Amino acid sequence: MEQGAERHRQAVEVLRMGKSPISVGLRNTPLFAVMGAIVGIFIATIRHLFHDHQNMDSEELRWHFIPQMLVAMLVGATLLGGVSAIRSWRKRRRGYRDL
Image (cartoon, rainbow, N blue to C red; front, side, top):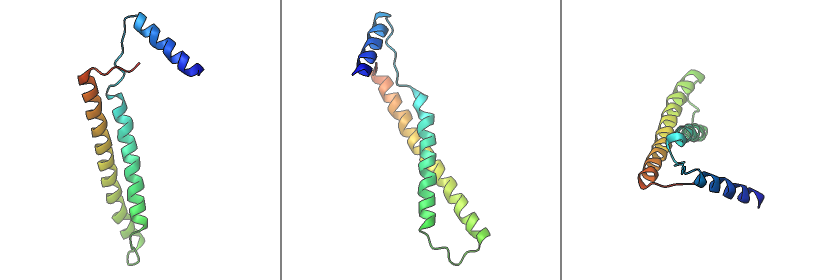
């Protein structure tokens, strides 16, 4: 309850100062890109653990996994970062304001 009242008081102060900040920018995009890379690592690891590797030695196994993990990281980072950038751009274009 007190947290909501504090947030409301801050919003009123911002409006009194004549400033209406647009809080949605590209600042969230790097965070979502990192989250996408982490999700990519997780997916590549799970896929690798459930894949049959009985006929591979350790060196071959390593070079089998690393490229797959890098691709999954890049795809995850690009996908989530791109979605975040497009979402931020669309919100700024509409003039979305979050207090």
